[in-house]
Each structure stands twice: as structure tokens, then as C-alpha cells.
Length: 289
Picture 1 (cartoon, helix red, strand yellow):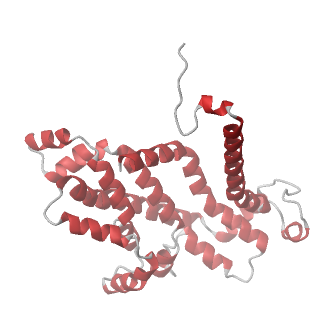
Picture 2 (cartoon, helix red, strand yellow; picture 1 turned 30 degrees about the vertical axis):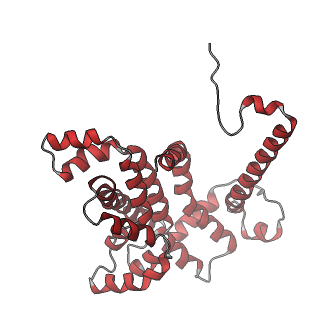
């Protein structure tokens, strides 16, 4: 069986040189160190959740004396977080749909249709990446109140339907699609919207997966806008509920640790399920761009 030849910055025969081997080992060491620095806080918070208050305050060991799930069950019931999980899932689902459709439509217009003046719009979209998102919170919140959209998930959904980074990702991917497919759909009588939904979008599953994962993670972790819009309503998301829970005087440090674990579970599960698609598709989109 023929051996597969791997190519890259460092190839197999380069490792025969002592200097290259030492440099490669140093890079691997730095990568492992970065992984430990990134993962250690997650492990520490999770293990701390198994401790009671006395053990949490007195013990210097990272490992708990027991791994009973009873403290997590008590904290779950104390939080009453089941409904907040459902609210967050509704917020995430609508955000993903809006992120794919609205940003995809704009990316389709800038990357394939390219109408007159598209260059100006493209520059404005790119320019918006340089502006901090927080500067738009005040006018955004004022407009939400004027339109009577307060206490609703709709502003959260639409905010993800206008994301410059997603537009650029879609635009770069669409520009790499074969023009013959687009022209063939037009010859068959498809309108621009039909071409987008029936031809372009099904061919864009790699970039759709990337945008969907980014949108899910961002929508789940979003706090400020849900706090402003949904505060004091039955539609509060997990992040809003955790913030309010942390301000209660009856909350101890160990209980707060367990509540943080509840907020980390969905993104971690999402990463382990889609890590291959996320890394591969992000790299491929960057190369095509």
C-alpha cells in the first residue's frame, strides 16, 4: 500500500534535522500549555461544583471528596432554570434562522448578484467590523422600545440577522461557487430568491454550519441585550437568570459554581459534536476568501 505523503510547513524528512525537531517539540509544548491554560478553568469550576460550602472554603485540593450529583440537583431546583433553558433554546433557534437567511441574502447580493453600488455596501459592511458592538446598544434599545418590541424574542433574533462577520463569510463562500450553476438556474426560470433558496443555500452547507455554530454560541452566551429586553418577564434566558441568581443574598460560592456549570454544558456539547466541521470549514472558507 502506497504511503500517503503529508505536506506542510514541516515535512517528515525535515524532522531528521536536530534543530527542526527541537523547534517542533517546542511548538508542541506551547500548544499543550495553551490547551491547559484554556481548559483548566472549566475543569476547576466543574470539580468545585461537587464540593459543599465547608469543603469549598477550607480545602486546597482541586478534587472533591465525593462526586455526588445531589448538589447539582439541589442547585437546579433552587434556580428553577428549566424554563430559562427553554427560553434560551427559543432565542438560539430564532437567532440561527435569522443569521442564516438575512446575512445569507446580503452575502448573496454582494457576492453573486453584485448590483450597481454594491461596492459601497460592501465597504460599509466591512467598516462596521471596526466599531464596537456596545456603541449601538443605546440606540438599538431605544428603537426596540419605540417599535413596541420589548419583552419579545424578536429583537434578539433580528440582531443576529444583521452581523457583518456572517455577511463576509457568506460573501466569500458564494464568490467561490461555479457561475455556471447560477446561470443554469436562471435559464430554467428560477427567480433570484428561488436561486438562493433552492440552489445556492443547499450548496453552501459548509459555511452554513460555521455560521450556525457561531450564532448558537453567541446567542446562548449573550447577556446584555436579553437583560435589557427580557428582564422581569417570564422569557428570561439562562444568562439573565444566572445574573439575577448571583445577586441574591442566599447564594453561596459553591452554589454559584454549580450554576455556572449549567451555563457551560450546551456550548461544550456543541463543540464536541461539531468541532471537526467547525475547524475544517473555517479553514476552507478562509482559503477560498
